[in-house]
Image (cartoon, rainbow, N blue to C red):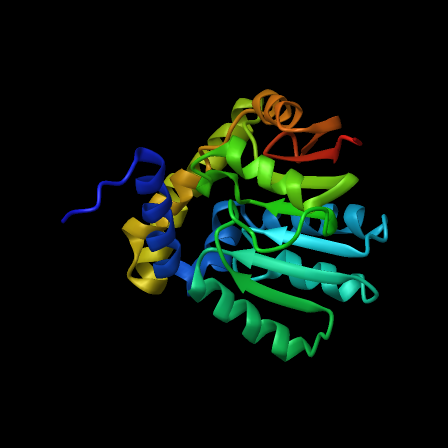
Length: 241
């Protein structure tokens, strides 16, 4: 008997299979599509998070663990956890963690919508370039809210849509030209690189992200544009009570 998947389930499977296939090249892909700026953006937000000295940090949609490992390195007293639905990504993340010999970080392969952690376990949740792979934003944000303590913080870093036409052209060139060309030359996966690039560029507007956060139990919501609006960092707190 054939299993009939809903549109959201089909999207989740499509995204999962795609990331499983490009896992070894994913970090290079982000560098190419952002002209290397993704490293600057991550460092910028990582420093903001680290300045708060959180004790229990969850990095969701962690990929190969770039943000997770930076947070673990710069917050040695904290417990840092990375979660991703791609087992291949988690394998690479664990390899990187072993190379750094970090004792305060752990990775899990699981659905971000159904985490195994108890209610109120973390005081900080980080979502770094993960929105495009989420099929149900409301369900996802409710789960992030559940695992946070009252007053706990969520940070979301992702691509945005700059108002400057020159920056729009730059982003478009990175996503639609450089990414598939590099994918074809480096890994023979030009089509996969293009799919990932275009998908990651399809993110909600800043206004929508803020509205969704408010709708799903967060307050003190702020959005900070980065590099002329090519990316944005959102910060909010779980409502007390």
